[in-house]
Image (cartoon, rainbow, N blue to C red; front, side, top):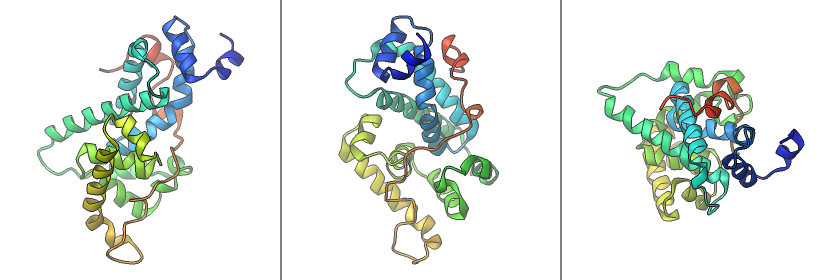
Length: 229
């Protein structure tokens, strides 16, 4: 399949071609969606290595499970669901291993370096360092809902499809998450107590762009079915 044919194909067509044995179709899907998958994973897990591994795991799973896709949702929703599930699995495992509080200051500073956050105002400044630090105190399910709705800008209905839960569950997880974050962040809000901190409780611009080297290699990682399981 030449570049023009690849570029003009829909995600669903590309996935079908991948199932039929086209060696380039899945790489194009990865190229289209990797940045947004990476942004969700990074904000959900708060750790570059864990996020990269989660995206790697998700892409390998999607590569292998493409034949199970039935078109009941958009391909991007299907990919995000697989990615979020990979993130939640890693978050739960990390929580079970943690025996004492971890100082994430250095890790968060690395996430917020200017060359990475130039296209992502939500990850600049003291407020957003505090926001990401506070997010890590939430249960994984609440964290994932807030990342999708408040930081990635997904409508609640779309986030519900990604998380494979009812819309009411997404709303309640977001509400409980915001309530837990407010005491941790209200001191940073210019109007003082009683208001939702900036970036929480409202939708933000969708996605952030990340350097390709930060995520998994979209060709090597999936063509051979490799990656760390």
